[in-house]
Amino acid sequence: MQNRFDEARARKMFSEKRELLGRGLSYSEKILFLHEEFGTSRERKAPGKDGIRLTPDRVAMQDATA
Image (cartoon, rainbow, N blue to C red; front, side, top):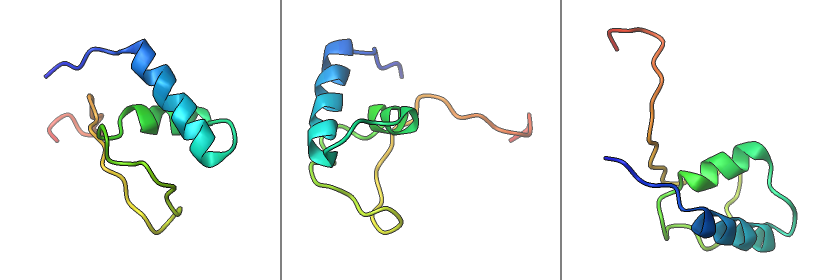
């Protein structure tokens, strides 16, 4: 499964998230938001309480046999 990166969609999503949070985004937030399941988060989340659904495109393992 390969998802193509859509720069226009990413810029739009970043703009919406900045407006929702009322501040700029950190690098780690940008990475997480890019991997967030599309259309699942329109409201502000409480850190440590609310979960998010992610769709990672790569997974790194410590052990080669994992």
